[in-house]
Amino acid sequence: MKKVTLLSSLIPVLLLSGCSQIPSYQKPVTELPSDKAWQQAKPMTPLTLAADEKTWWQALTGDAALQTLIDEALLHNSDIALAKLNLQQAQLLLKQSQSAQFPELSVNSELARTRSSDEAYPVGTGATFGNFSLGGLLSYEVDLWGRVDALNKQAEANFKATQADQKTIQLTVTAAVAQAYLNLMAFNQNVMIAQETVQSRTETLQLRQTQLAFGSVTPLTVHQAESELAAVQIALHQKQEQRDLQLHALAVLVGKSPKALTDMANQNLSTQPLTEYDSLPVPNALPSDLLERRPDILAMEQRLIAANANIGVAKASLFPSISLTGLLGFQSEALSRLFDGDSLTWNAGAAINAPIFDYGKRQSQVQISQAQQQAMVINYQQTIRTAFKEVLDALTQLEASAQQLDAQKRQVVALNQILDLSQKRFDAGYSSYLEVLDAQRNLFNAELAQVSMMLSHSSALVNLYKALGGSWKPEQKQGKT
Image 1 (cartoon, rainbow, N blue to C red):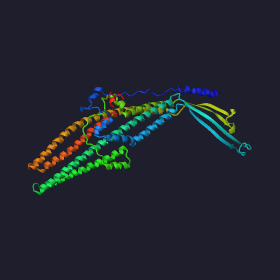
Image 2: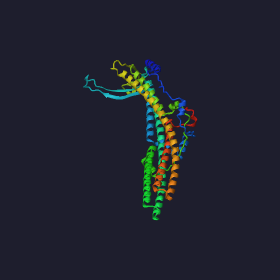
Image 3: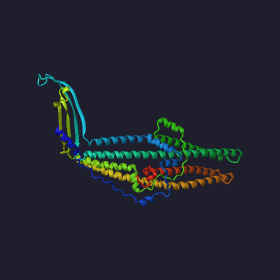
Image 4: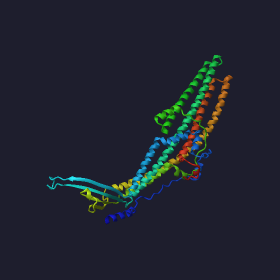
């Protein structure tokens, strides 16, 4: 008993005796653009700060439907559901790893009676006897070289990386729902333009047919009006098809069931027309802020930390491992005497497992772990490069779309005037009907192009929101999160 007590008293000391083999972690140095250059990269289009993210989504789309769809997607989207399960698994693995730092206690018991054979050797010694035992087994791996600690740090880093992965997926789904809804707005607006144009072309055809009856135009003019009406009707059906397909995609993205998807498809979700909007819920962010906000960058750095800890695991395997066990219990032939003083039994032991010669297997594992860590450094740096590229791409798209949209608006105004003048010239007999048809086609295409430019501008805002990490709040405008 004294020996068991002595062994137990040594365990807290041994818990603290580990010698870590984990290399000192050094965050990779990344050359970032200067604050001045970063500010100059912003578009000339003035950006103002929205009150909050919910207000921004509503101002961007003109209604609260998008925020409702985003909230629904965050609850029901399949990718987000899988991310939650992955996070749960990572949390359990971390808990499992942390438990290895402490001694393990288990209870062993046995209740048995045995009859040995008289015919077995030695012959004639058969007997009936019992074997009853109850004991506790305490086992512990002495972490002299920090293997258990390295595994714990690796599991902790992987858990944090999985947390960041979940935020990345939430950000991606949010941006995808917003983009899909903007697409739906654009298709609805295109359908509306096409419907109005069909109505206008129908009235024009009726007018030409009346004029033909009075002999003021030729049959060619009527056929040309019929052709123009058919062309616009084809365009209308195409836009309706694109709208319905986009609505189906949005329903799946939000996580609708097949029944709900069908119901949503039959509703033809109405939306507001796209408008030009220059507000963005982001502060005057500095380059370093991006490294702290992007969840994919945070996830990659945690995986780099995990790979660094894995080197410690591999190095610890080069040294002997020591396991301690202690057994204290009772054993008796009769159940009634199990807890008698003479039934006490105990055992204390230590096992050492030391590698002698393994043909370089363990050393190779160390080198593999080091190579994996170096690969993670490259991936981390590439993730940062990709992040800054996405921000710059979104800024470029935002500025270019604003300029194109401005020019497109002027073109629509000019084409409206051209159509009006062409119609007057035709009515006065100064030009052919082809001039009117060209003006009609050009105006119709320009109106569709204007919707496309508005969509591109709004999409650039969503892309910039995603590239900067999303979820900005006014109180964070100094870049601290």
